[in-house]
Length: 523
Image (cartoon, rainbow, N blue to C red; front, top):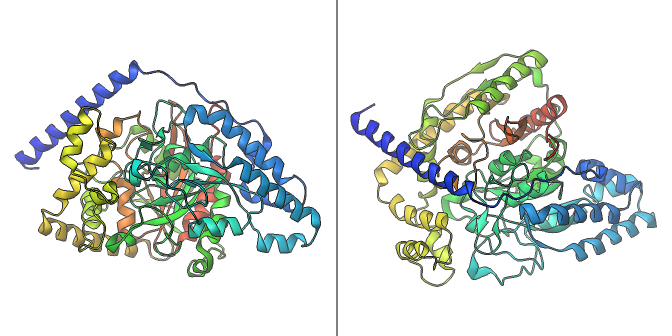
């Protein structure tokens, strides 16, 4: 390492530690929200697939199920602030319609299952997606009064499959930060410890599902916005192979090269529900995957990488996360009789730089982030930063910072071109390594859920998830129990394009053998 690089590393790490120390000192004097009690109602502890089956068979009324989830939301939401706008009355009316359909016996159970695979299942939706009658501001004050006149494609498909939306959930401003906080709805708080973040941008989704207020949800992911919230909240999230699930109907939508990075996918409390929800979301595109193909887990190739190799911009991986990954490796080797090969992929150390270059390689097609923030008016990021310092800006600090950083991203075209080439090489290397039957185990993040505002000191830690958006690989985030401090641990399960069935099968296996989601407040 050169002397200049050593000095840069020292300066970055010192400034980061100082900022973290200040944030933690401030948090000592902040009001401590109460912890949640675990859900007790058995209906709240039942997978979506089982709930739908019970409703179709008439074993439980949909109105009872939906009311149970509404009651849980009312119990926990004052603490976690996850669901930001409800449609409880509409949901109860739709639940009654489901009960009337079942009691009419106009269709037998098999027909109901074919036509309505999610019949009566409560559903939450990220506020960035259009849900008829609901706000779709994406945390932007200038869109505060907007109400959706239609449903996003995935929302429409889930509703046609019988799911009952209960409301929309919080996200970061314009969905580009990994703490879900904005100037309309405020901040969402982790159900395992409200002093910690829920992740972003689909943070409200991960939070309300983990807290027992929903069982399945809709998320989007351009740099880890499904997987980070799923990890921080101890649930499952799947970023599909790009192009499988339509992104239409969300704001902001992707343009130019960013369309290859943005993915819409399911967030679920139970791994067993991931394939079911993914099939509904994908529609006919599901035929491009192999979800009905039986997976022999003991015949797969397994690889494990415990860190990114030492990225200059990203924090080292927490010891507890490394230990959890090593326990998982031992578990797989003992239970499946496989050999998990430790590997080092050199170019993963450039994950943040590669993602940043990919986001700015649009050739002018993608809308400028500052223009999105301005929403039809004019916005000067530098001036907004000054306004923010005196409490006069309408925007959050992370959004302002991103708008400023975006202006610098285009100043180094040669460097960006090198990173795009590294991305191509990396994609070829990993696809060759995994083939059609390989699995890569990789950290979900470098840190266990940080306290509020701490991401400001380590803004690039999302690189552990963002790199797989650039590479176009399917990834399932899988919980691995709780840390010594009671916060979720997790792992990313990665495979090659169109082999989503491999990561989903392993996630379901681990749910059965290791336990999956742990209710908050139960330990």
